[in-house]
Length: 291
Image 1 (cartoon, helix red, strand yellow):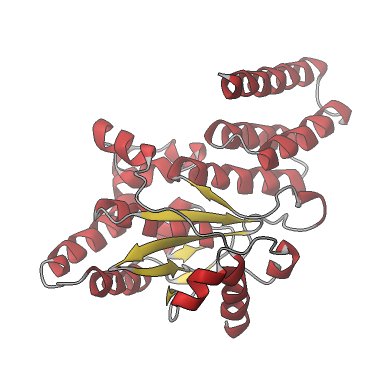
Image 2: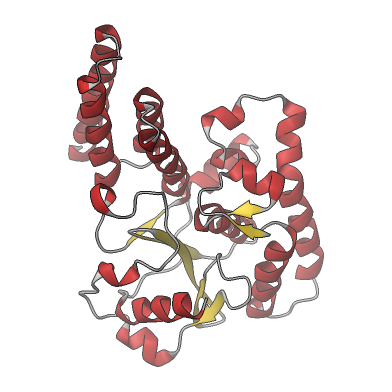
């Protein structure tokens, strides 16, 4: 745990200063549709269930929000309330670290990874109208925010010290550029493939909730790819690309479609189907980027 904190501190020294105050579009859409926020983070196979089972998935989240609603009335400072958010979520929802846990698994069992942990914190922060940013690394995600004039971060995988303040000296040093991402290998990974052919991402970027949800499909695509379930892998990475048309997702789609085309046990009509889907999806995204 100490090693993880030390590496994250080193990263913070070299992270570019970010701007706060951006409202996530996905949050606004969920509110308009009156949709439960957790639903946006359930992958397709987890949505194929009845309303009662879906409702059970939402219970832990709703219970924590209810508790925090009551606590909010007694917390005069946002920073004190943020501490309540951090520790209540870990006590009630995030129980055991499991890198590849999906959102449904997290809500059912308490097993969580940095992705689902970050998502739950982000949704609750949105509920209470905190301004924050989600930072994506090559193999990790966490939250950065400013509370009562203090830059802070939420590292969901550290239940004891994961709510951290950033000193003024650190904040000044964060303007430096040129951090070597190879120094981050000991951080919690997003997806099995954080080395070798999966190193399709460099640096750090700010992402929104929709893009964060897309990372779950990326994880699932890698899992199926390793199992040589290439058609299922293609379905997952296609969904990931729809949520988050990143270079990493595009490259993984290329890897998967190449496997499909070369795999003897897949029928030609299926190969043509997925090749057409791949070309159409990427071309559509390229066109939208030029508008």
